[in-house]
Image (cartoon, rainbow, N blue to C red; front, top):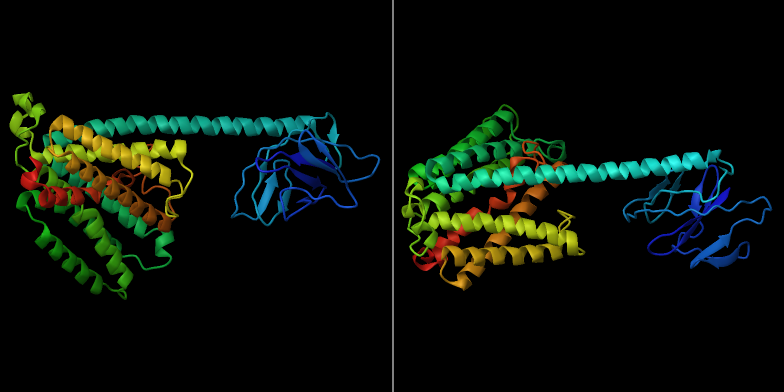
Amino acid sequence: MFRAEIHSLMAPWTLEFDASNLRPLSLASPCCRSSHAHSRRRTNGFDTLNLSARPNFREFRFRTEFSCSDSQRVFGISLGLRVKHSRRLVTNVARAEQPGQIDGFGITDKEVNRDTQSSLEDSNSELGHKRSQLKRRVIFGLAIGLSGGGVVLAGGWVFTIAVSAAVFVAAREYFELVRSRGIASGMTPPPRYVSRACSVVCCIMPLLTLYWGNIDVSVTSSAFVVAMALLLQKGIPRFAQLSSTMFGLFYCGYLPCFWVKLRCGLAAPALNTRVGASWPLLLGGQPQWTVGLVATLISISSIIAADTYAFFGGKAFGRTPLTAISPKKTWEGALVGLGGCIATSVLLAKILCWPTSILSATAFGILIFFGSIFGDLTESMIKRDAGVKDSGSLIPGHGGILDRLDSYIFTGALAHSFVKTFLPLYGV
Protein backbone atom coordinates (compact mmCIF):
# COMPACT_ATOMS: atom_id res chain seq x y z
CA MET A 1 0.00 0.00 0.00
CA PHE A 2 1.20 3.51 -0.75
CA ARG A 3 -0.13 7.00 -0.95
CA ALA A 4 -0.25 9.35 -3.97
CA GLU A 5 -0.96 13.05 -4.11
CA ILE A 6 -2.74 14.19 -7.26
CA HIS A 7 -2.05 17.85 -8.06
CA SER A 8 -5.18 18.90 -9.95
CA LEU A 9 -6.13 22.29 -11.33
CA MET A 10 -9.06 22.49 -8.93
CA ALA A 11 -7.79 21.08 -5.66
CA PRO A 12 -5.36 18.40 -4.43
CA TRP A 13 -6.54 14.83 -4.03
CA THR A 14 -5.00 12.18 -1.81
CA LEU A 15 -5.69 8.64 -2.97
CA GLU A 16 -5.16 5.34 -1.17
CA PHE A 17 -3.70 2.54 -3.30
CA ASP A 18 -3.74 -1.19 -2.64
CA ALA A 19 -3.47 -4.30 -4.79
CA SER A 20 -7.13 -4.48 -5.77
CA ASN A 21 -8.71 -1.13 -5.16
CA LEU A 22 -8.05 2.55 -5.75
CA ARG A 23 -10.40 5.06 -4.23
CA PRO A 24 -10.42 8.71 -3.15
CA LEU A 25 -10.78 9.14 0.59
CA SER A 26 -13.64 11.56 0.07
CA LEU A 27 -16.20 11.15 -2.70
CA ALA A 28 -18.14 14.22 -1.70
CA SER A 29 -15.37 16.70 -2.40
CA PRO A 30 -12.09 16.82 -4.33
CA CYS A 31 -10.43 17.85 -1.07
CA CYS A 32 -9.73 15.06 1.42
CA ARG A 33 -11.28 15.26 4.85
CA SER A 34 -9.38 14.32 7.93
CA SER A 35 -10.71 11.89 10.50
CA HIS A 36 -9.66 10.67 13.90
CA ALA A 37 -7.81 7.74 12.29
CA HIS A 38 -5.58 9.94 10.15
CA SER A 39 -3.29 12.82 10.94
CA ARG A 40 -3.28 15.91 8.69
CA ARG A 41 -0.40 18.14 7.62
CA ARG A 42 0.22 20.69 4.86
CA THR A 43 3.17 20.34 2.43
CA ASN A 44 3.93 22.76 -0.41
CA GLY A 45 0.45 24.18 -0.26
CA PHE A 46 -1.30 20.79 -0.47
CA ASP A 47 -3.26 18.96 2.21
CA THR A 48 -1.63 15.61 3.01
CA LEU A 49 -3.11 12.83 5.11
CA ASN A 50 -1.11 10.11 6.80
CA LEU A 51 -3.24 7.13 5.84
CA SER A 52 -1.49 4.49 7.93
CA ALA A 53 0.34 4.36 11.19
CA ARG A 54 2.24 1.22 10.26
CA PRO A 55 5.97 1.70 10.88
CA ASN A 56 6.98 0.14 7.54
CA PHE A 57 4.78 2.50 5.51
CA ARG A 58 6.76 4.16 2.68
CA GLU A 59 5.68 7.49 1.23
CA PHE A 60 5.73 8.14 -2.50
CA ARG A 61 4.87 11.49 -4.01
CA PHE A 62 3.30 11.45 -7.47
CA ARG A 63 2.72 14.38 -9.73
CA THR A 64 -0.13 13.54 -12.05
CA GLU A 65 -1.76 15.16 -15.05
CA PHE A 66 -5.34 14.23 -15.67
CA SER A 67 -8.41 15.28 -17.61
CA CYS A 68 -11.92 15.27 -16.24
CA SER A 69 -15.23 14.38 -17.83
CA ASP A 70 -18.45 14.69 -15.88
CA SER A 71 -20.22 12.14 -18.04
CA GLN A 72 -17.95 9.21 -17.08
CA ARG A 73 -18.12 6.98 -14.03
CA VAL A 74 -14.76 5.20 -14.09
CA PHE A 75 -11.22 6.49 -14.17
CA GLY A 76 -7.97 4.62 -14.64
CA ILE A 77 -4.32 4.87 -13.69
CA SER A 78 -1.49 4.21 -16.13
CA LEU A 79 -0.19 1.50 -13.79
CA GLY A 80 -3.21 -0.61 -14.66
CA LEU A 81 -5.44 0.16 -11.68
CA ARG A 82 -9.07 1.26 -12.07
CA VAL A 83 -11.53 2.82 -9.70
CA LYS A 84 -15.24 3.58 -9.85
CA HIS A 85 -16.11 7.13 -9.04
CA SER A 86 -19.38 9.02 -9.15
CA ARG A 87 -18.13 12.21 -10.77
CA ARG A 88 -15.07 12.34 -12.98
CA LEU A 89 -12.90 10.47 -15.42
CA VAL A 90 -9.23 10.84 -14.49
CA THR A 91 -6.32 9.68 -16.63
CA ASN A 92 -3.10 9.73 -14.61
CA VAL A 93 0.51 9.77 -15.69
CA ALA A 94 2.47 9.07 -12.50
CA ARG A 95 6.18 9.09 -11.67
CA ALA A 96 7.66 7.94 -8.37
CA GLU A 97 10.10 10.45 -6.92
CA GLN A 98 11.85 7.87 -4.76
CA PRO A 99 13.89 4.98 -6.14
CA GLY A 100 13.16 1.38 -5.43
CA GLN A 101 10.13 -0.80 -5.71
CA ILE A 102 6.56 0.23 -4.96
CA ASP A 103 5.26 -1.79 -2.07
CA GLY A 104 2.79 -4.52 -2.85
CA PHE A 105 2.94 -4.18 -6.63
CA GLY A 106 6.42 -5.20 -7.78
CA ILE A 107 6.60 -2.09 -9.98
CA THR A 108 10.03 -0.50 -10.20
CA ASP A 109 11.07 3.05 -11.07
CA LYS A 110 12.20 1.75 -14.44
CA GLU A 111 8.72 0.53 -15.28
CA VAL A 112 7.11 3.74 -14.09
CA ASN A 113 9.56 5.82 -16.15
CA ARG A 114 8.88 3.59 -19.14
CA ASP A 115 5.14 4.24 -18.80
CA THR A 116 5.81 7.98 -18.52
CA GLN A 117 8.10 7.91 -21.59
CA SER A 118 5.48 5.96 -23.52
CA SER A 119 2.84 8.55 -22.63
CA LEU A 120 5.11 11.37 -23.78
CA GLU A 121 5.83 9.56 -27.04
CA ASP A 122 2.10 9.07 -27.61
CA SER A 123 1.51 12.78 -26.99
CA ASN A 124 4.27 13.76 -29.44
CA SER A 125 2.93 11.32 -32.01
CA GLU A 126 -0.57 12.73 -31.66
CA LEU A 127 0.76 16.29 -31.97
CA GLY A 128 2.67 15.34 -35.11
CA HIS A 129 -0.44 13.72 -36.57
CA LYS A 130 -2.48 16.86 -35.93
CA ARG A 131 0.17 19.04 -37.60
CA SER A 132 0.29 16.73 -40.59
CA GLN A 133 -3.49 16.75 -40.85
CA LEU A 134 -3.57 20.57 -40.62
CA LYS A 135 -0.90 20.79 -43.34
CA ARG A 136 -2.88 18.52 -45.66
CA ARG A 137 -6.02 20.48 -44.87
CA VAL A 138 -4.35 23.77 -45.83
CA ILE A 139 -2.80 22.37 -49.02
CA PHE A 140 -5.99 20.78 -50.30
CA GLY A 141 -8.01 23.80 -49.18
CA LEU A 142 -5.81 26.13 -51.24
CA ALA A 143 -6.04 23.79 -54.23
CA ILE A 144 -9.83 23.69 -53.98
CA GLY A 145 -9.97 27.47 -53.55
CA LEU A 146 -7.84 28.22 -56.60
CA SER A 147 -9.66 25.75 -58.85
CA GLY A 148 -13.02 26.92 -57.52
CA GLY A 149 -12.09 30.54 -58.23
CA GLY A 150 -11.28 29.66 -61.83
CA VAL A 151 -14.59 27.84 -62.22
CA VAL A 152 -16.52 30.80 -60.81
CA LEU A 153 -14.76 33.23 -63.16
CA ALA A 154 -15.50 30.98 -66.14
CA GLY A 155 -19.21 30.81 -65.36
CA GLY A 156 -21.72 29.38 -67.82
CA TRP A 157 -21.60 25.65 -68.51
CA VAL A 158 -18.19 25.25 -66.84
CA PHE A 159 -19.59 26.50 -63.54
CA THR A 160 -22.83 24.54 -63.92
CA ILE A 161 -21.12 21.24 -64.74
CA ALA A 162 -18.82 21.68 -61.73
CA VAL A 163 -21.85 22.31 -59.49
CA SER A 164 -23.59 19.22 -60.94
CA ALA A 165 -20.57 17.01 -60.26
CA ALA A 166 -20.30 18.25 -56.67
CA VAL A 167 -24.04 17.79 -56.18
CA PHE A 168 -23.90 14.19 -57.43
CA VAL A 169 -21.13 13.23 -54.97
CA ALA A 170 -22.84 15.12 -52.12
CA ALA A 171 -26.14 13.34 -52.82
CA ARG A 172 -24.41 9.95 -52.77
CA GLU A 173 -22.82 10.82 -49.42
CA TYR A 174 -26.15 12.01 -48.03
CA PHE A 175 -27.98 8.79 -48.92
CA GLU A 176 -25.11 6.73 -47.52
CA LEU A 177 -25.55 8.65 -44.26
CA VAL A 178 -29.27 7.88 -44.35
CA ARG A 179 -28.47 4.17 -44.76
CA SER A 180 -25.86 4.21 -41.98
CA ARG A 181 -26.40 2.21 -38.83
CA GLY A 182 -27.07 5.24 -36.63
CA ILE A 183 -29.99 6.55 -38.68
CA ALA A 184 -31.23 3.29 -40.19
CA SER A 185 -31.58 1.71 -36.73
CA GLY A 186 -34.54 3.98 -36.03
CA MET A 187 -36.12 3.96 -39.49
CA THR A 188 -36.34 2.09 -42.77
CA PRO A 189 -34.00 3.67 -45.34
CA PRO A 190 -35.14 4.05 -48.95
CA PRO A 191 -34.19 1.26 -51.37
CA ARG A 192 -30.81 1.62 -53.03
CA TYR A 193 -32.24 2.03 -56.50
CA VAL A 194 -34.29 4.99 -55.26
CA SER A 195 -31.23 6.54 -53.60
CA ARG A 196 -29.19 6.20 -56.78
CA ALA A 197 -32.00 7.58 -58.91
CA CYS A 198 -32.31 10.57 -56.59
CA SER A 199 -28.56 11.22 -56.83
CA VAL A 200 -28.85 11.33 -60.63
CA VAL A 201 -31.89 13.63 -60.42
CA CYS A 202 -30.00 15.98 -58.09
CA CYS A 203 -27.11 16.03 -60.55
CA ILE A 204 -29.40 16.98 -63.45
CA MET A 205 -31.17 19.80 -61.61
CA PRO A 206 -28.39 22.43 -62.00
CA LEU A 207 -28.11 21.65 -65.72
CA LEU A 208 -31.86 22.14 -66.18
CA THR A 209 -31.66 25.37 -64.19
CA LEU A 210 -29.12 26.83 -66.60
CA TYR A 211 -30.96 25.55 -69.68
CA TRP A 212 -34.50 26.56 -68.72
CA GLY A 213 -33.81 29.22 -66.11
CA ASN A 214 -36.52 27.75 -63.91
CA ILE A 215 -36.36 24.59 -61.84
CA ASP A 216 -39.82 24.43 -60.27
CA VAL A 217 -41.47 22.11 -62.81
CA SER A 218 -38.60 19.64 -62.93
CA VAL A 219 -38.34 19.50 -59.13
CA THR A 220 -42.06 18.87 -58.75
CA SER A 221 -42.01 16.20 -61.42
CA SER A 222 -38.99 14.48 -59.87
CA ALA A 223 -40.57 14.47 -56.42
CA PHE A 224 -43.77 12.93 -57.83
CA VAL A 225 -41.85 10.18 -59.68
CA VAL A 226 -39.78 9.34 -56.58
CA ALA A 227 -42.88 9.21 -54.39
CA MET A 228 -44.56 6.83 -56.85
CA ALA A 229 -41.46 4.60 -56.93
CA LEU A 230 -41.46 4.38 -53.14
CA LEU A 231 -45.19 3.61 -52.94
CA LEU A 232 -44.95 0.86 -55.57
CA GLN A 233 -41.93 -0.94 -54.10
CA LYS A 234 -42.19 -4.63 -53.18
CA GLY A 235 -41.93 -4.09 -49.44
CA ILE A 236 -44.21 -2.07 -47.20
CA PRO A 237 -43.64 1.68 -47.82
CA ARG A 238 -42.63 3.76 -44.83
CA PHE A 239 -43.11 7.46 -44.24
CA ALA A 240 -39.48 7.70 -43.09
CA GLN A 241 -38.41 6.57 -46.57
CA LEU A 242 -40.49 9.28 -48.21
CA SER A 243 -39.38 12.06 -45.85
CA SER A 244 -35.65 11.25 -46.05
CA THR A 245 -35.82 10.99 -49.85
CA MET A 246 -37.72 14.24 -50.30
CA PHE A 247 -35.36 16.05 -47.99
CA GLY A 248 -32.45 14.68 -50.01
CA LEU A 249 -33.95 16.09 -53.22
CA PHE A 250 -34.45 19.45 -51.55
CA TYR A 251 -31.13 19.55 -49.63
CA CYS A 252 -28.76 18.13 -52.25
CA GLY A 253 -30.61 19.06 -55.47
CA TYR A 254 -32.91 22.04 -55.25
CA LEU A 255 -30.92 24.34 -52.94
CA PRO A 256 -27.57 24.12 -54.85
CA CYS A 257 -29.41 25.22 -58.02
CA PHE A 258 -29.59 28.73 -56.59
CA TRP A 259 -25.83 29.04 -57.06
CA VAL A 260 -26.42 28.58 -60.80
CA LYS A 261 -29.18 31.18 -60.63
CA LEU A 262 -26.92 33.55 -58.73
CA ARG A 263 -23.84 33.19 -60.93
CA CYS A 264 -25.42 32.71 -64.36
CA GLY A 265 -28.92 34.14 -63.93
CA LEU A 266 -28.01 37.66 -62.76
CA ALA A 267 -26.46 38.77 -66.04
CA ALA A 268 -26.81 42.53 -65.45
CA PRO A 269 -23.40 44.22 -65.88
CA ALA A 270 -21.67 45.48 -62.75
CA LEU A 271 -21.13 48.93 -64.20
CA ASN A 272 -19.27 50.41 -61.24
CA THR A 273 -16.73 47.62 -60.91
CA ARG A 274 -13.32 49.07 -61.77
CA VAL A 275 -11.76 45.60 -62.01
CA GLY A 276 -13.88 44.86 -65.06
CA ALA A 277 -12.52 47.87 -66.94
CA SER A 278 -9.02 46.43 -66.89
CA TRP A 279 -10.03 42.79 -67.32
CA PRO A 280 -8.27 41.14 -70.33
CA LEU A 281 -10.38 40.65 -73.45
CA LEU A 282 -9.02 37.13 -73.72
CA LEU A 283 -10.83 36.31 -70.47
CA GLY A 284 -14.08 37.99 -71.51
CA GLY A 285 -13.32 41.65 -70.91
CA GLN A 286 -15.63 43.95 -68.97
CA PRO A 287 -18.86 42.09 -69.99
CA GLN A 288 -17.57 39.14 -67.95
CA TRP A 289 -18.09 41.13 -64.75
CA THR A 290 -21.78 40.81 -64.09
CA VAL A 291 -23.75 41.24 -60.90
CA GLY A 292 -23.91 37.46 -60.66
CA LEU A 293 -20.13 37.09 -60.77
CA VAL A 294 -19.52 39.82 -58.19
CA ALA A 295 -22.25 38.52 -55.86
CA THR A 296 -20.91 34.97 -56.13
CA LEU A 297 -17.33 36.04 -55.39
CA ILE A 298 -18.41 38.07 -52.36
CA SER A 299 -20.64 35.25 -51.10
CA ILE A 300 -17.97 32.55 -51.38
CA SER A 301 -15.26 34.78 -49.90
CA SER A 302 -17.53 35.70 -46.98
CA ILE A 303 -18.30 32.03 -46.29
CA ILE A 304 -14.59 31.18 -46.24
CA ALA A 305 -13.92 34.14 -43.94
CA ALA A 306 -16.76 33.14 -41.60
CA ASP A 307 -15.44 29.56 -41.29
CA THR A 308 -11.83 30.67 -40.85
CA TYR A 309 -12.50 33.41 -38.30
CA ALA A 310 -14.91 31.18 -36.36
CA PHE A 311 -12.32 28.38 -36.22
CA PHE A 312 -9.44 30.51 -34.96
CA GLY A 313 -11.72 32.62 -32.76
CA GLY A 314 -13.06 29.49 -31.11
CA LYS A 315 -9.54 28.16 -30.59
CA ALA A 316 -8.40 31.40 -28.97
CA PHE A 317 -11.45 32.56 -27.02
CA GLY A 318 -13.95 29.68 -27.08
CA ARG A 319 -15.54 29.01 -23.70
CA THR A 320 -19.33 28.80 -24.12
CA PRO A 321 -20.70 25.91 -26.23
CA LEU A 322 -22.96 27.06 -29.03
CA THR A 323 -25.12 23.94 -29.33
CA ALA A 324 -25.08 20.28 -28.40
CA ILE A 325 -25.19 19.35 -32.10
CA SER A 326 -21.56 20.39 -32.55
CA PRO A 327 -19.81 20.60 -29.14
CA LYS A 328 -16.64 22.19 -30.57
CA LYS A 329 -18.50 25.29 -31.78
CA THR A 330 -18.68 28.15 -29.30
CA TRP A 331 -20.50 31.44 -29.04
CA GLU A 332 -17.19 33.29 -28.95
CA GLY A 333 -16.07 31.63 -32.18
CA ALA A 334 -19.43 32.38 -33.81
CA LEU A 335 -19.19 36.07 -32.90
CA VAL A 336 -15.65 36.29 -34.28
CA GLY A 337 -16.85 34.52 -37.44
CA LEU A 338 -19.73 36.98 -37.79
CA GLY A 339 -17.34 39.92 -37.51
CA GLY A 340 -14.97 38.41 -40.05
CA CYS A 341 -17.81 37.69 -42.48
CA ILE A 342 -19.17 41.24 -42.29
CA ALA A 343 -15.69 42.75 -42.61
CA THR A 344 -14.96 40.64 -45.70
CA SER A 345 -18.29 41.51 -47.30
CA VAL A 346 -17.81 45.25 -46.71
CA LEU A 347 -14.18 45.20 -47.86
CA LEU A 348 -14.98 43.39 -51.12
CA ALA A 349 -17.97 45.67 -51.67
CA LYS A 350 -15.59 48.64 -51.49
CA ILE A 351 -13.11 47.01 -53.88
CA LEU A 352 -15.68 45.76 -56.40
CA CYS A 353 -18.06 48.74 -55.95
CA TRP A 354 -21.02 46.39 -55.39
CA PRO A 355 -23.36 46.82 -53.69
CA THR A 356 -22.98 50.58 -53.59
CA SER A 357 -24.47 50.93 -50.10
CA ILE A 358 -22.38 49.99 -47.05
CA LEU A 359 -25.60 49.11 -45.21
CA SER A 360 -26.52 46.66 -47.97
CA ALA A 361 -23.04 45.11 -47.84
CA THR A 362 -23.32 44.70 -44.07
CA ALA A 363 -26.75 43.09 -44.32
CA PHE A 364 -25.44 40.83 -47.08
CA GLY A 365 -22.57 39.70 -44.83
CA ILE A 366 -24.91 38.99 -41.91
CA LEU A 367 -27.21 36.94 -44.14
CA ILE A 368 -24.29 34.97 -45.57
CA PHE A 369 -23.00 34.20 -42.08
CA PHE A 370 -26.29 32.81 -40.80
CA GLY A 371 -26.77 30.74 -43.95
CA SER A 372 -23.24 29.39 -43.54
CA ILE A 373 -23.43 28.45 -39.87
CA PHE A 374 -26.89 26.87 -40.07
CA GLY A 375 -25.85 24.90 -43.14
CA ASP A 376 -22.90 23.60 -41.15
CA LEU A 377 -25.09 22.72 -38.16
CA THR A 378 -27.63 20.95 -40.36
CA GLU A 379 -24.97 18.64 -41.76
CA SER A 380 -23.54 18.14 -38.26
CA MET A 381 -26.98 17.04 -37.08
CA ILE A 382 -27.21 14.48 -39.89
CA LYS A 383 -23.72 13.13 -39.14
CA ARG A 384 -24.45 13.02 -35.41
CA ASP A 385 -27.54 10.90 -35.96
CA ALA A 386 -25.58 8.71 -38.37
CA GLY A 387 -22.83 8.26 -35.79
CA VAL A 388 -19.98 9.30 -38.10
CA LYS A 389 -17.36 12.05 -37.98
CA ASP A 390 -17.16 12.77 -41.71
CA SER A 391 -19.62 12.25 -44.54
CA GLY A 392 -16.85 10.71 -46.67
CA SER A 393 -13.12 10.57 -47.28
CA LEU A 394 -12.81 12.02 -50.79
CA ILE A 395 -10.81 15.12 -49.78
CA PRO A 396 -7.80 14.44 -47.50
CA GLY A 397 -7.96 16.55 -44.35
CA HIS A 398 -11.50 17.71 -45.07
CA GLY A 399 -13.62 14.54 -45.25
CA GLY A 400 -16.28 14.32 -47.92
CA ILE A 401 -17.74 16.79 -50.39
CA LEU A 402 -20.70 17.34 -48.09
CA ASP A 403 -18.32 18.25 -45.25
CA ARG A 404 -16.67 20.87 -47.46
CA LEU A 405 -19.84 22.31 -49.02
CA ASP A 406 -22.26 22.21 -46.09
CA SER A 407 -21.83 25.95 -45.46
CA TYR A 408 -22.75 26.73 -49.08
CA ILE A 409 -26.03 24.83 -49.37
CA PHE A 410 -28.36 27.46 -47.86
CA THR A 411 -26.31 30.55 -48.67
CA GLY A 412 -26.86 30.38 -52.44
CA ALA A 413 -30.63 30.61 -52.03
CA LEU A 414 -30.33 33.39 -49.43
CA ALA A 415 -27.88 35.43 -51.51
CA HIS A 416 -29.97 35.11 -54.69
CA SER A 417 -33.18 36.08 -52.88
CA PHE A 418 -31.47 39.05 -51.23
CA VAL A 419 -30.16 40.44 -54.53
CA LYS A 420 -33.43 39.88 -56.39
CA THR A 421 -35.72 41.15 -53.65
CA PHE A 422 -33.95 43.74 -51.53
CA LEU A 423 -31.43 45.44 -53.82
CA PRO A 424 -32.90 48.02 -56.23
CA LEU A 425 -31.52 47.49 -59.75
CA TYR A 426 -29.57 44.50 -58.36
CA GLY A 427 -27.43 46.82 -56.27
CA VAL A 428 -25.74 48.51 -59.24
